[in-house]
Every structure is written in C-alpha cells, then in structure tokens.
Length: 283
Length: 176
Image 1 (tube, each protein chain N blue to C red):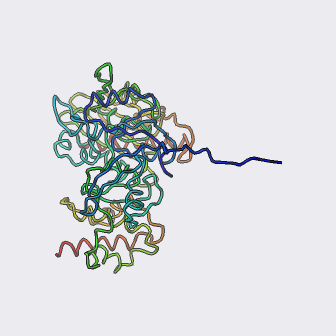
Image 2 (image 1 turned 30 degrees about the vertical axis):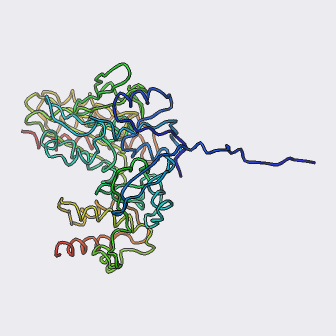
Image 3 (image 1 turned 90 degrees about the vertical axis):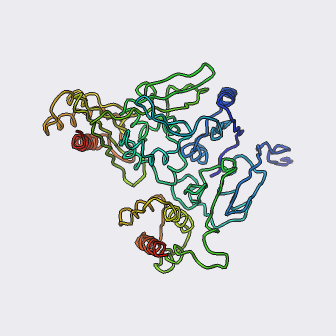
C-alpha cells in the first residue's frame, strides 16, 4: 500500500531537528526508514511529521574512543558490519549483523534506528544489552546517557522521550581475551529471531554475559544463567545448568511462530551453543 | 423521494505536501516536484516511466523493487523519493548496453533459464550486480550465493537456475 500523508522536514542542524521533533506531538524521526516506511506503507504508523535526519551535521560515522565504539545516528548497519576497526574491537557485532534482515536492507537501515525501534526480536538492541552498552538521546532539555538495561521497556517502547533524538549508541569494546558468540534460530534467513542469544565469556574476570531476544516483550539479560557461570569453570554440567536456568526468561506467549514451550527449549539449546562457542574463542 | 447527490468530500486543493527532488538516475540528472510521501519505486515508474523496477509487496520483503542507491543495493519501496534527492540511483534500465547488448549477468540468466515469469528478475539482477561490482570478494559457494539471494523472492524457478546463473556471471566477469 501507499503511506499516509505527512509533513516532511529535512533539517541541517541537530538543534533544528530537535525543535522540529518537539514542535509536533505526532512527529517521528526518519533515519534509514527500513522499519518505519514499511509500517507506514502498511498504515500501521501514520506520523503527522517526519524529521529526516540524513542531512544533519555530525550524525554520520563511527569512532572508537575510551573503550567504546561510538555509532552515530545515521550509521547504516552495513557500515558498522564491514568496518575492520569495529570488527577488531568487538567481533560480536559482525557475527550478529549477518542475521539482521538482508544486505539491501542493511545498506539503508541504521543501527541506532533499529535500537530506537526496539523490536523485541531484533538483534542489535539485544547486542547493545549483551555488551552493556548505552544510548545518548538529545532533546530540548539537553543530552543524557541511558544504559541499554534502562532503555528497553517493552516491545517497540523505550525510555526515549518523544521529543528526543538518539544521536549515538555506545557499544563497549570487548575486553582483552574475551570470547564471543551469537546464535539465532529463524524459519527463514533474515527474519526476526524466534529466539537468539549473545554470549561474552571473560575468563580473566570469571564473567559470562548473556542476553536474548525474541523470547520476551523486550531484549533480556539472562541473569540466572550468568550467575551460575560466574567465577566457575565452564564444565558441560555447569553449562547445562545455566542453559536450563535460562528458560525462565521466556515470557512470550504462544504465537504463529512458536509455542512458549518450544521457545523455552530453543533458548536453552541456544544458550548452550553460544556459551560453548564463546568459551572456545576466549583466551 | 429525493435522496440528494452523494459527493465525495474532497478538499478543494490537495493538502498532500510536495517537495522538489533532484537526483541522478542511470547517469541522467532528473528533477521534479513530487508528493513527499511518494516512494522511490513510484517515482521511477510513474514520474520517469522506468517501469523495469517492479513493485511486489511494498514492505521490503520480496525484493522485486531493488535498485542501487549510491552504488549499493536498496529497496526502492522503502525509500521516499525525497530521501533519494541528491543521490545516484541505478535501475535495471542501465544494465544492458545502449545497443541492446546484454550484460554478462543478463546473458547468464538467459543461458541458465534463471527466470520464468520474470517479475522478480530486475530486483534479482540489481542485487546480484551490486555484489559483482563491489570490490569485496564474493562467496560463490552454494550457501554463499543463496545467502546473497535470500532477500529476493522468486515463486517460479525454485532458485536452482538463478544460483547457476550467478556462478556463470561471476566466472564470465572474472574472465573479462
């Protein structure tokens, strides 16, 4: 179908962009448009005003500073995926990115846009959560930093205020010697996850970080499993116990893709695979 | 009984906001004043008459509308024409030579019988071409090619012959 009527703004400065967004309660930010435009074409979204931020100064590119990968708002998925410095700093990102839709979508869609869209089954919000990252929203009251843990509230709902633009996402660099893995199950390549898990194993700190998507109303940290694996040798028995503990994180009801019981089984299998793979890559 | 006249309640003037767009399509500069909600796919087809770009699902799933924007593949149904202002767009119409001579990829599609109804073919070609023309090495394993094609749906061929065509085209282009 065709998208409904809207007013279009293409500001050049962040100050103007924030003012245009704040100036209309029905306004939405347009970055890559790969989630918003299909929703508009299906008439599921009908923003009164679109603030296109593609020409806004200072919102392009990636930098690595103070142990964080700073991804600015107009950075496309594909740009982050192919960046060699990003791959060296945090290889989990490239591994997860291969599961985000298809290349033509990744060529246009932005990482920060996907994080703000906050689909509960989307990969990048979950990777931000797994790495302990954060986002930086800017609004009429200034700029603030919000941890991923506090940002994602519910399916397509975040703590971003309607008049704020998320200008950056910060993905921490993986600690020296840490192992990583991303495991996902979908019916078709490029679909949203029925369930997916990211694992980071840090042998020196005795820490294992685990997050999942597709299993609840938002991406979740698998804290019960993390506690079982903390400070312990990653024996098959312990990994099995952690995988079983993860199933309590599944709150998704039965839907057209999978039953709750199937998702619980799936999540436990994916946790086991992800931890084993991440541990094998740790030094 | 007089039922009166039923008239559609249309506004006297259109409230559909418009904007000027100027972009390069297949090497030619074009400009127009279009509705801001006009999709790039509709701009190419209805404003420019470039009907080689096909419209399938209009929500980014089928890949029939794939074109190249600034050298990389993209869904023209998930891009507003105003967003593409200033960009370089390439469509299927730019692929064959001016004298009608087919591109090696198009030849490979013909040789391998990689199309039946042909509806998905322009999107397939633009997606594959962006891979063939990129400086990154292509993964020409069965799995690699299928991964590349995964964003383009074909309901006729079962994909076998499209995979074969990609391989033939990659070999032909490497030999040039």
